Length: 436
Length: 192
Image (cartoon, rainbow over all chains, first blue to last red; front, side, top):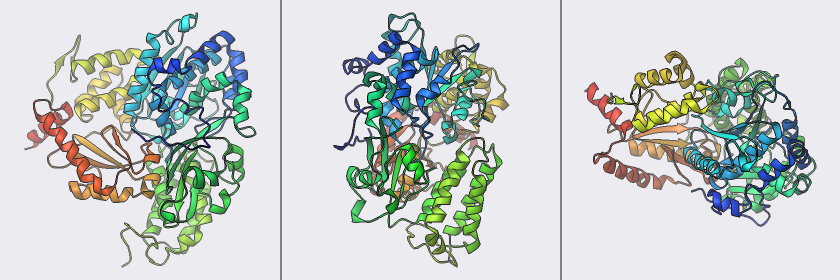
């Protein structure tokens, strides 16, 4: 079982029940569970959406769209059934927070799904987990069955004249399916290729019906927003960024782990205090702040950086999925860039040409570079390729590959130049040297 | 090919439990086709891979063409069309794991097993795969063996992990080999 980390600066809201056996429904009830869903049944959809808007809860999947506003876009009247879709396809490298939510607090996901359903008038919610999370899917399935047995799901939930069904679903290995429109395609039993927007899912979504799609962490936060009240939840975070965030801190730190910290918490403190600083007394070279698709930051850029969507955006990167990857000074950034791009090349669904061809050429160029066959003009070519991928694809996967590439080349140009003219990688550990 | 089991109405490749599960699965969604991806994965778990016969039966159950099933199945990286080892070792080498030595671990598995990416050992016990992020970044370097996670591993732990799984094969071969294992053994026998 994955190790739980803790730190005194943590504000435990979503992770409050981690390690407390809350996957068992009776335990979850003892810990105050399902009270928020009952309250929402009494208060009605307008009240729920208002509390959600007050909470400033923004999408935890990475885009940071205000959840309350997203819910309010769903038309009240609809000829087709409406749906809630919970995105647990967690696949962004550096991110493992939903893993812990499904493991320790599956009922919070169910309760949040019920509340989202009440808010938009949906009768069915889907909870989609990536295929690799089989043991977590089994935990979720057990939790759903227990909730049905208690009458919290079904035709008359909590004894009210309201129907709500929850269906769990497994993926089968695809990063792209984490994108909301590709997720709907996958759930409909198709290849996970993105749909063009508009129409947005809130209008035309799953099976053609209006659909609200939220990340698992967003949904698991919802019962807490209701319990605390939207305004109190918002007060925990920073301006326009309500509540807390589960930061997955990984890489070269002394104490990697998932830490729940208020929005706006300082990134330098995350690296040096919360995660215990750089491993083995080495120095910091760079930090990827929000999963592998977010542009890398230099040590001087994290000094006064508050980790919320707006501040990280202003610093030229993104909060993304809050997967903080810490890189020490013994790491080759060309190799790091290559591994990052290899991932996007592997995961590009091939639908949009700039992404399919762009990721492939970036991988080829970076491989050649790291093997010692790079030429000076390749550095500019890599940049040119990445610039021409930006904004030219249906979904953000093309951008997710291009943005970090641009940052690697811009911020570590010297390291790229150090690989020129057949020079061996200065940090070579396991690279086959291509010098002839 | 595994023997066909009689199910309630039709002949099926799958165990009675799995056939019953599939009967329920196609009823579960607003559209039958939504059952396709879980069905393929669960079928693979039992049979070992998506054989032509598996694809034909799944197509019939979902009510779409075999071509359509293949079109979808080839998209998903966990689905395979050839048998893997009884224990499929998936080594994550994505960034968080790479920073903490995933390549060394991957190399150690290659040395111990004598196979590379997507290779299968001659005895069919193990297969090896270098995979993308498996969502265990804070417990890196991590691997998955079938669906089991192993966190914070080191190269020197590799032989012990392999021994643990070898031990489980012996228990299984004592009368209760999994169908995945069986399918592969039979295919080997027919090749020979």
